[in-house]
Amino acid sequence: MDFSLTPSQEQVRSQARAFAQERVAPMAREMDERGAMPLALIQEMADLGFLGGPLPKEFGGGGWDAVSLALCYEELGRADSSVRGFMTVHTSLVSQCILQWGNEAQKREYLPRLTCGQMIGCYCLTEPNAGSDAASMETTATLDGDQYVLNGEKIWITSGNIAHLAIVFANAEPKLKHKGICAFLVATDTPGFRREKMRGKELGHRASDHAHVVFENMRVPKSALLGAAGDGFKVAMSALDHGRLGVAAGALGVAQACLDASIEFAKTRRQFGQRIGNFEMIQSTLADMAAGVDGARMLVYRAAWLKDQGVKVTRDVSIAKLFAAETAAQAASDAVLLHGGRGYSNEYPVERYYRDIKGLQIYEGTAHIQRIVIARELLGRE
Ligand SMILES: Cc1cc2nc3c(=O)[nH]c(=O)nc-3n(C[C@H](O)[C@H](O)[C@H](O)COP(=O)(O)OP(=O)(O)OC[C@H]3O[C@@H](n4cnc5c(N)ncnc54)[C@H](O)[C@@H]3O)c2cc1C
Image (cartoon, rainbow, N blue to C red; front, top):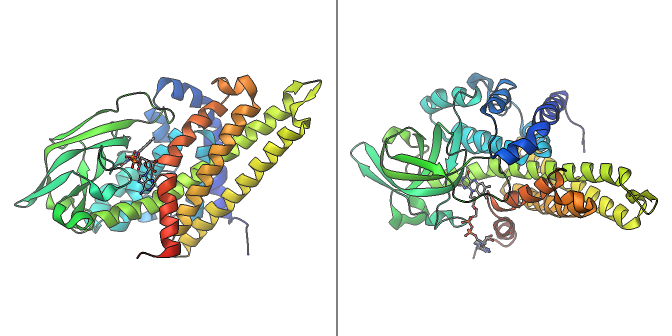
């Protein structure tokens, strides 16, 4: 067993680390307070080759393997979950999904533009009455000649207000349940595509854009189908296999950031005439955090490595996402406590990690849903 990284994986990691620490981390607090990330930062990610990292070179991508992509997400997640979340949606849920399911014309039309940052992508699955149970979606697609007419609404759509391209899921034959679902590639300036900011202020991921999207008699040509009619549910789930690995790697980054911040604080904060790191309870917290980070890293890298071997990774990715997000949530909670009153203020980044990590436990399948996926693989269906 070889745990070392290849030179090209090392290179991706060091480039992502430099960008995350030098460009993203210094502005993370301001982005969180302002509730947005600069479009220029997205363009920088495109220029560095991150947005197209895992795409083949013929589409302007970097030809990265899954391990490299996970390393990039880990480093971004270590600095800021909104920025990492943006890239996971854009690159894994949208671009990798088009690469897997798109026909030649669709790949040529969209992938180079998504890669260079000319287009931003979003993924429209969740609805007010269909979250974990995505198959029960109520958005309909009615065939009318050589067009589909879409009606319905989506919520919590990351980048939905800034995106140029949306993968939209709608049911063309509700009687067939999930077998009636279709995936469509939709330009967001299509008449009938309406979007607005989600109501309320998010707990975390405050620099992300979250949209409420409404389709009102939105007409799209048959050629906008991504995959065949009725393949939509498979398209949605396969995209989540890509995206969940990104969330798992991002959670690993959050856990690492909590550990880094806590070590630094334990070495410098003094009480009772000594550094707090001398107290056994603080040492125990740090040791547990370090063990969790190592465990999460093994699971995330293993899932990525298995993906690179061409193995079906649904179970491994769910295990990695579940473990990494739960580990990071515990680490963030412990990190806030370890920082005392300072951990309760945005003067230190741990309170942002604490707020952001709840999102990673929820999106792309909640922790409950990951347990269902894992248990189904263990027990089979009856
Ligand atoms: C920051 C953020 C970004 C997001 N970005 C996107 C995006 O870009 N695109 C998109 O389509 N969606 C997005 N979402 C939506 C997200 O995927 C959903 O919120 C998530 O799938 C859960 O659905 P729900 O909110 O409807 O919760 P529900 O499905 O209503 O779940 C409520 C609770 O019930 C539990 N539950 C549900 N079913 C079961 C079951 N069978 N067994 C046990 N427990 C169960 C859940 O785990 C949860 O605890 C985003 C959400 C957030 C918070």
